Image (cartoon, rainbow, N blue to C red; front, top):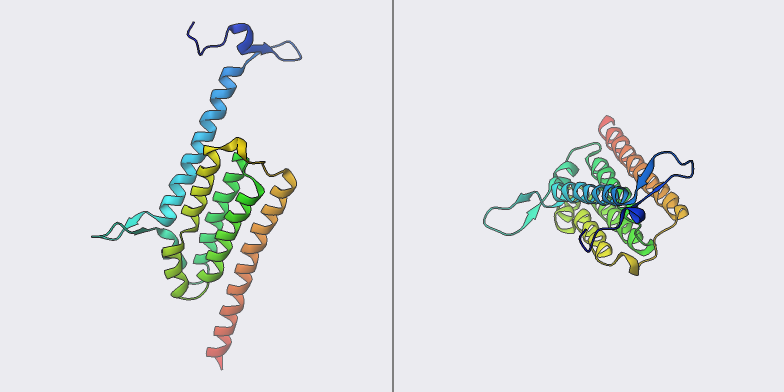
Length: 186
């Protein structure tokens, strides 16, 4: 037995019903793999949205988020939904309230400025809310014990806030489309 292994008497135990033994090492490994898989998904989506395309001859890159934002009638809404997914996945890392609030702020700022035609898409290229949020997650993971995790009530508030943000964004787009339609109809 190596120095890192746990004796069988400490690594597994029976459930309260006494049926199948539970291996704590397997549970820990499954949790670690889920954690790594979740982080890989967040990294991949963040990269796709904010850094997937490198400008030739430079070190600067941008992603699909500003390109999606160019789509009339909801491109920015799709970008906001994808950014919200990253934040919701991040809550499973037991992030603190200030960290989740900063992540939400990054999305809201990108959403608000992103609604301005052309200027908003240029802002998207530079702001990179998803990359900023990924850095916040990674900073938390470097020292997870130093932060108090948000409770379930804050998670509910966060989900409601994300839904409200998306609903407001959709309502604003509908209002703009109606305004433009009425302008051209007269």
